Length: 475
Image (tube, rainbow, N blue to C red; front, side, top):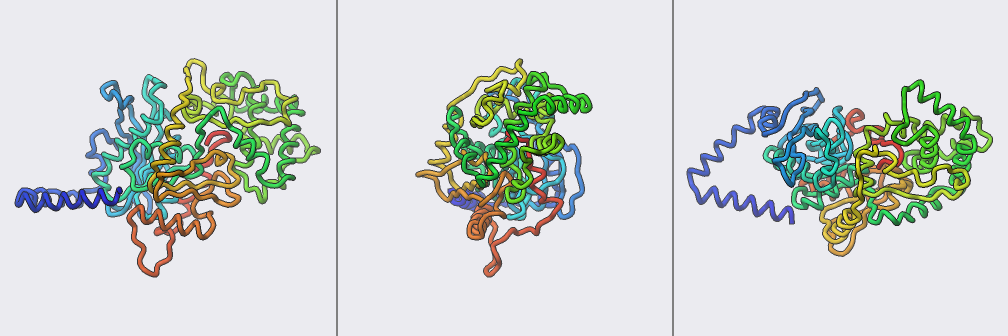
């Protein structure tokens, strides 16, 4: 449908040019010089676009920018804010990838996997309310998935005048969710969507999929070792919390939002199994899980590596308040059982978004938001691709296709974690996913040429896993 629409638009323009004679010819002639104008000047000619800096990148132009957006797209007259973005420019003759992490944007040049595959440009947008892209004062009611989709739509319309080839939306984890929501509200903007490891919490009150995941993932021995080390972490609470308090003094970390260091420690421990499967390579990490007779030093170091001691400090939480707010108002969040720890818990039920958002910010959950998204994907998805990981807990509740979805796919990386991508799929799936993405982007592969990324791998630009890693229990 999207390709047919573009063909009709092109035909209409051609017919208009023929029918209006010299007037259209003059307009066409006037448009030609735009191609000779420096790309930076063309971008900065967009109303509301401001340059922060340009950084040198071999083979590209890389811009860090601010774009003026309405705080409330429903009432654009009620104030604006500056939304940060980056633009990795290759050529206006290449397709463009619209990337979002769903969090802050990196101001260092990075290429998403689709950008490498199609050898295109990349626009990366910071999610609203992640600083510095936060309105002042912050009306948190304006942080919702529809407002964020409007941010993307408005920016796309502004840049599409320059980058008029095919566009692909993408993102990993919360970024994959964001790309999906954008497509739901503005289905005609993009020519395709690639959503990586994107959770889909349709019913926030029903999370049994996570319990089934933790009962079956990996080997029985690894699951047993993880249960043991979690119990040891709580059995040795006095010593570990003392160390945590000393660590906090040294790091000038505080725990006002969660309550105190003991509460933060309990949340950290109940997160360990999730964080382990989310990021650790199962084939090697299971052997490194501390045993029951591990020393306190061994236990402490492992907890820090898997959980991150700053995760539930005020300083660690501050950056992620917008995510926790959304989790507690629209996105939903995982809730899984840990019966092996029940007798050792002091604060059961503490591990939820309300505990991590300052109390002065009110939260009310909208149970219909994700149901609407899920229904749309199942029955209206077109040219959408979901890539999940077999060993990724976030993939326990993933997007599914149904009757009415067209030219769309769900792929799973065998043994894959939260860093799963197209390159790690089984060969047949990898070739299929790559071919579909190239087709959606309008990139033709010459006869006899291998179906593969059109741009060679660049370690500096394509080093994804570390740059995309998020602390535990944040998608």
